[in-house]
Length: 225
Image (tube, rainbow, N blue to C red; front, side, top):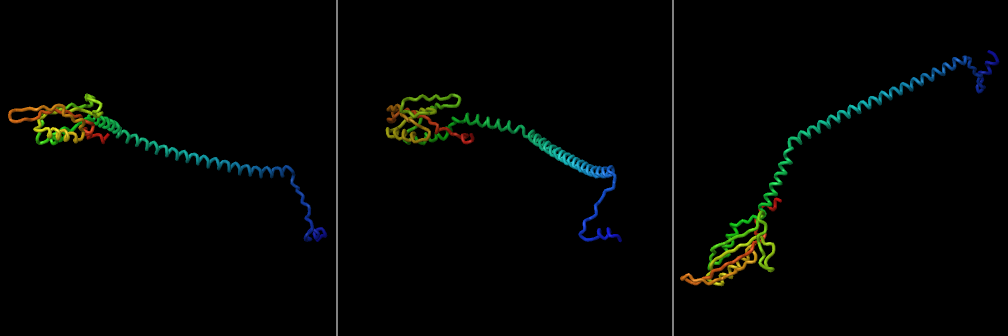
């Protein structure tokens, strides 16, 4: 073994200089091969990314198309249901119009049977009711009531006239008080009191008027308005 080999094997001694004996064109060729491998790998990655993106876009497109089909189906179902009930709004409008017309037409309704019974009950035993005449405002006639003086009740909606007989003046006074207490009546006035004699006894012929107020209206359909 030569001295040179012994020196090369000594621990801690500097390594021998390396010399690349390949020709330059071979070294360049090897470097180009490495670059080509990296370029091919990069191109492969780009292709994979493009394929993955295209697949994602295609999947999203299919999902959007499926969702659109579901929305269209739901819309078609709603349109079909709307067609089934298309007449409902028309029926409701007609019903509301009929209710409004009924409310208007019946707004001046008076239940005369109980009123006549109340007037009869207000007549004292010493008196009798002969005739009664009613003039009432309606939706079609409007107001026909004429105020007789500044002390009359405003807003009256009709007038009633009656004639009858009473045996005493006290009965006439009680008759007037009884009519005044009835709901829906106002301005009760006994305008004339005449003494009469039919041969069987003396009695008083009376004529009275009183006004009707809106409290006399039945208002049967007012709460449905």
